[in-house]
Length: 382
Image (tube, rainbow, N blue to C red; front, side, top):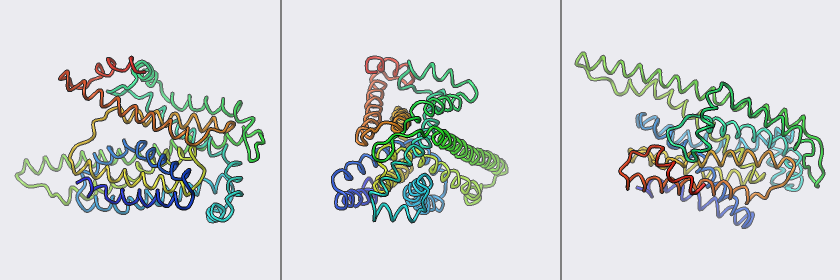
């Protein structure tokens, strides 16, 4: 079962890591591996959501999602999107950006370094919004209760996430961005550039979130309608049509899943810029991670159950918050990519360990896994 589901992912992993090692050496090998782990971890909740929706679709639409969907996810968002970001911020054409990365890596590095304040501001604000929306939301399970409980109360204030994000952006532009690092170690005032790019990142998040919400509402409407039709058919003694139930609703599910996957791809791609500016290393690492996310989605659907490591989502979002902070800091100060990657991996690994401890405690106490369990065990470790 595992080999059948994850076989392609294992093969892509071996090929990708071998390619990184052969063409670029051990540093590329390590960073591609870290990017793969981060992409899997940051998209873990995406796989869970995908599985919950995908299991409602018929075999045809499941196949569409796992074939056409993977092409969009790997080649569209993980390969093309990083190139587009570099092209826009460095003000060169996409083809020229790829040619520079291949033929003149020194010039490419100079362009990316000079464009880094824009990339960092755009990505930092996008990732910060993802973290803030998560941390201010009221949730059943709380990984670090003494932090998450009070913040969830503040989350009841309208637009609190946007307000805090704008305050952070303004502070960054007025302090860190006034002495942004450039190629050769020079520092220049990039406050205006950082403000513009940061606002663009915030707008992008709001647009992506709006599209996801739109398709989610459509999906809920179709599900309600189909439930009503199924109940009416049962009352009249007829069997509901399985094909009809899978038609329009499945189409909306597919659109919703693609928008949702794209939104989760943003944080992986943008977060990757906090680890490396090398577009080919990013493409390899994020592509490997995307394959595992799809395989995990299939595995969860075929098993008929969703993973119950309840703090993994928390760990992933704390890693997103850390990446957002690091991106904004790197506007002025350089932070080694391996350190950045290890911080994210450590947070996610700790959340996994916390989930295991919680599950064992719940099983031992015969409880239902509410937040009282988390509060008993967390203060001694945080």
